[in-house]
Image (cartoon, rainbow, N blue to C red; front, side, top):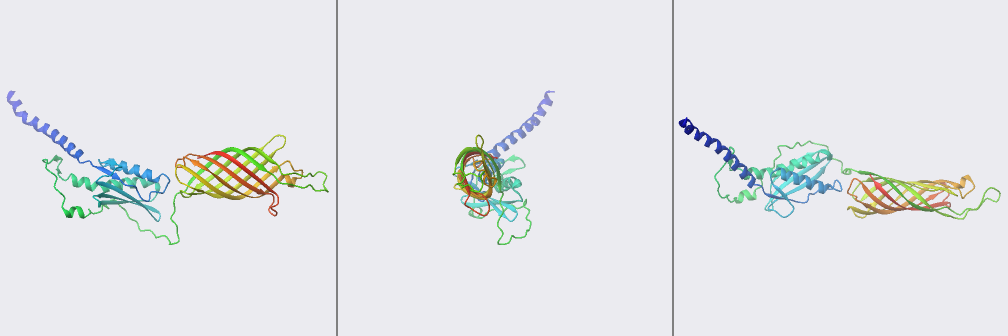
Length: 351
């Protein structure tokens, strides 16, 4: 029995050596992790929060390779370009070391929904060449004896590594005509708001031949208002708008003033807090019991208006808006002598 134990000692030593070698291999791989600076991506303005989303995806991809993403300056840098080509997006990631591109990779995405996958693949492949070159001394899962790293030759530093295109599928598509503009996604919001309004009617002289008619001096009324808007953000600084404002008061006398306007607005800045101004044109209706004749107290005609305000949390899916409007409504489509006017201040939520 003692002889058997002596014979099995080398076997146990051999089995433990495999564990030791595996541990040393894991430690060696961990020591090769490097800091990678993520440069500001270009062409990521496909959405207001596009640059932030792209940088988050790049950080996740760098971590996936076993490296550490950093914001400060580092020897290894990752620069990303997103190019719109016809109906698809081309993502190019380049590994920069010592101011020179040492490896790059490109991926293609046919839609925004698949853009995150393409960005991660391009970043991982662009950094993969560095990992392979650094771990070249690891053979058959065993760690080679420790040695001082050899200084790179001048040719290895100056000559970039070949681009890895093994996972890229390039399709030949018809080139858009020169007068064709690139398409970009439109962000749509529905706005619902409440506010207060101040509006007026117009001076009217009664018909002397009509005993039931009466003259009216221009009168001002105040009440609450309901606001609805559909906002199409076609760019970071402009939007197409469709708005409906209704001003109502009930009591001893009642009036209803409403307009539907189609127009646009311009955002002075595109940050989280965005002041804007805009204008619109459309139609409107007014009901005013100050007048005796049906043709007078029911007004229907062309309308126009201007607006100004501030949008808060504009880079969010839900926005808060403070706005002020002034619109004019002309009774009838032939004469502009009978004009209603209304101004309002409102607060709205854009979803």
